[in-house]
Figure 1: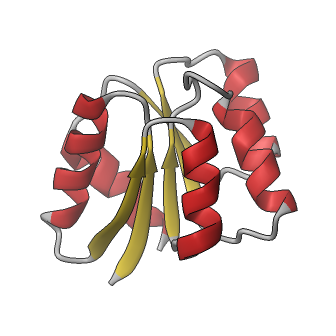
Figure 2: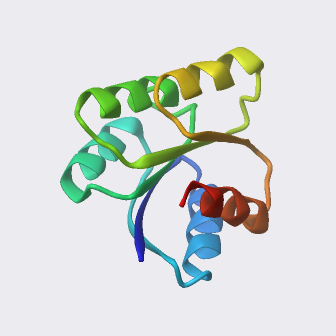
Length: 119
């Protein structure tokens, strides 16, 4: 099973992402973080295969977190999941090391489909 870290300040989104991925039987949720600082710490500690990353967090911006994770040597696949869907923000996330960018709102099925494409 692929290990997944969810970084999102919304409990609703963390639950939606967790439930959708766990229900496939292919993904194990190894941690959930409500802010960027905790997300970075968890990524360094648990070395997930996949990180879902919100872009607007209480303490940091997701695109900056992606850049920092890559600088720290984290090789996990990263899918940005955010309500911020402007082309320049999406391009920045991808340039900083994300593999995909999914704009909210989305369904659990849409998320699983995109995540499955990464593996």
